Amino acid sequence: MNIHQLIFLTLVPILVASCAAEPRTGNTGEQATRYGSVIRVKPGKLEEYKALHANPWPGVNRMLKEAHIRNYSIYYRDGYLFSYFEYTGSDFEADMALMAADSLTREWWKLTDPCQLPVETAAEGEWWAPMEEVYHLE
Image (tube, rainbow, N blue to C red; front, side, top):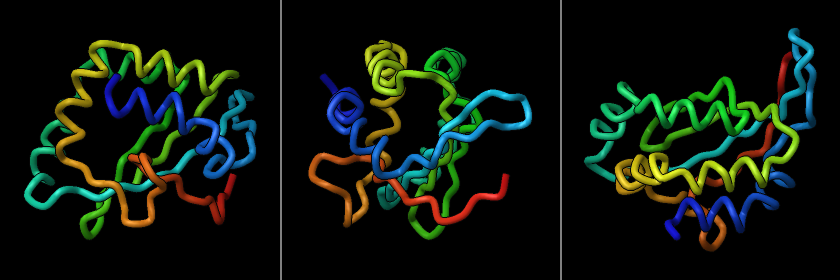
């Protein structure tokens, strides 16, 4: 079991409770829950990380969509990566476990994980640390 499988299988309840906004119904009528998280970039690894994400594997993107993730973005600033996505499914834990079990996604994580470091305030074993949503304009 790799670090992402462990994270998704053990920390999903924490993520759901601590960083998810209230589910919202958008213009399409589809309900989505917003998630934001943060992690650091290892020194000297930013260009490698950006190059990987400039050409993401189609199978990894397909798995994200199969796991009911949309509007997934990663931003960079001052050594930190900030992610945002919307979850439109009905069973977050099951969808994250499905993604963590996907062999292609695990191969992708073998390339991206060495570029990342948890933030100093991350909980024990936490990789991407959840962020609290403070404001959202629908």
